[in-house]
Image (cartoon, rainbow, N blue to C red; front, side):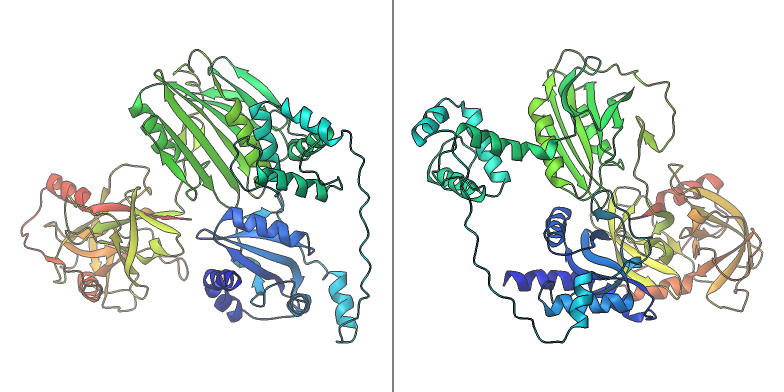
Length: 594
């Protein structure tokens, strides 16, 4: 049943990719992959990739977007990939629903750690596959060898001596051994330092796996061997205590991978110096609960905290975990005695064993010293609107304009703004869903996930405006750099498109890409259309030529989506101030995120 469930998950995650791949031209020389699985979390995908690597050659893992991660082998020529697929499925090495996949379906690589093979050339199919295909279809008969009897390693202590040495362990020593047994896969009960039947059985199982006599009591040397196995994952990281007096923090850090570079309050930056790309931030500032909560919100706007991952905020602490196909970051912060202190560990995705161990060592050793980082530290550093204390703010893939068309918060925008987005936001922080999309007319209607109360709603004039009459467009010309929509003024050049399209109005005004999706107003302040994105192909038009979808077409799309538009009742000429206030009240920034 579990296998069937995993298969269904894989099918759901990759169904659209199957259709895409099938539609592409197929050639024996195509560069393709054999996709084995798709998993809904990075940790699960990493574990599965590690498991397949123990059996197969050329195993790679890639993000698919939308929180899914693919495991694939390759890249091969199509003919080789089909041969690999047939052989692996026949031998039941991979699931029966494995399939041929193109590189275009994959995003960042998370496995093997640090690899980037998407753009390399093809490789030859594994020798085992070629050999299997060259032979007859009959399954070879493999003689069953007699299992070798393991040679037990000599014990350094008798059972009685081992029990005596065990009694001298501290409570933490006993817990550390349970943690090591759990990490090794032999123990799955509570870490309590109490050695009952479960702990004894796990010790015996570890002894058996390591060719020791199964007594259920570890000798001094066996305990050392177990802890050495547990700590071997940390070899070469240079874990050492670092004391940062300016930040008022002391803790263990992977000094072979990171080193101090600068202060930019409230952060002390320890940037990567090694090969894996790890980073550490120390967080230190004076403040209260409002400071803590504000930091919690700000951290989630940064690139170093991907949007996927658990996060929790309490009255005096918070923890953030963000993961994608590139990195995993984990932040722990607490408020105590008027000081907000903590740290962030940024680690490459796909290296979970080491990341978790390093994180545990850092958290366990974290010590608060006197004082906090000077609030003016780093004030002379480079400044930019998309940087917070030297850290890059997460930016959307694209931002366009939109405007409210009903009192419930429905937003009209250009269809360009909603294509290939993992999520959509209105004015930066309100999540939105696509209610309707009409690519023929280039328009989409969004519905906010949480209720909104618009300051103003568009009132539509469906009557064709007069030629050469004054019009204006409201929009976020610079894609959110400015905090409010701007107005651009021009004239209505024609009530048709260049090829006579009756649903288009040609405008004589210069606009920016971010203006697309914004409302087009007549002189009275009534909405007569929506600014369309400029075409990216075909003849290059003059800068002052733009097009708007007319009100009648907008009304038709809205009616099909069940949205009732408001009819215009304004006459005369609107004062510039009134027009600006109405435009800024109804116009919103629509952002498309990866």
